[in-house]
Image (cartoon, rainbow, N blue to C red; front, side):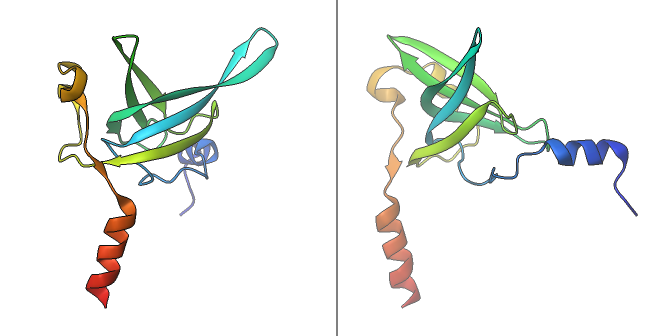
Length: 130
């Protein structure tokens, strides 16, 4: 059975370069977002911690939080939007929750998330195999 009309339109609008498991909650990411100002278009980076991801094929989103000049700023990005150039994962976070809304109440050093050292975890996995 073929795709319905709605499924066909959704499949055409999904980004092919997006890997859904490329990042998770707690990761520090840099989103390069294209901004149109008049006739010109430029790229602006938004760097922060992913505090939640919502599922859904075309409606999937992720929320990034950063603190700018002492003020917490959160931005919701559609995962399959054509407006961003790339999502770069800067560091992996060691968290046990999928929603990190508790970070909104924390400030300073308490709001830090412990980073996972990927090179040592890969080495440990290789040692277990041997």
